[in-house]
Image (cartoon, rainbow, N blue to C red; front, side, top):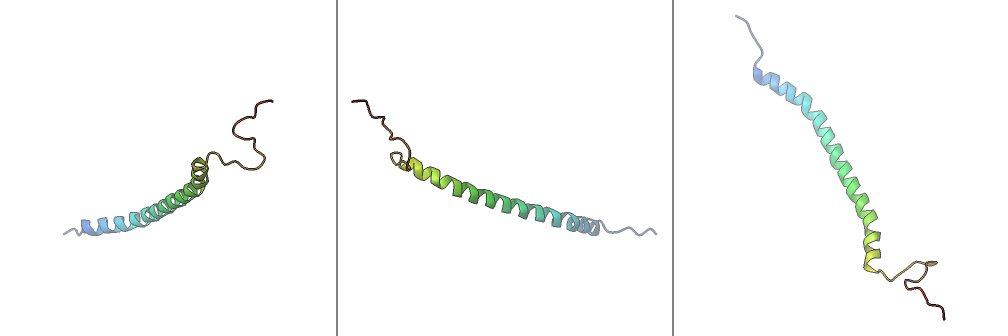
Length: 70
């Protein structure tokens, strides 16, 4: 009589071999997304604040309305 390994054990070993690298890639992707979101938020906030106060200008910039020659 020929003895062959049970299919369940083969699937279990294959699952173990594939699951760990996939989990590591998923964790790395989640970390990359979190980092990208933090960067986007950090860069977006000054733009949104500037859009809320359009009349406010930094030093050295010309006024919004050009003065006419008298």
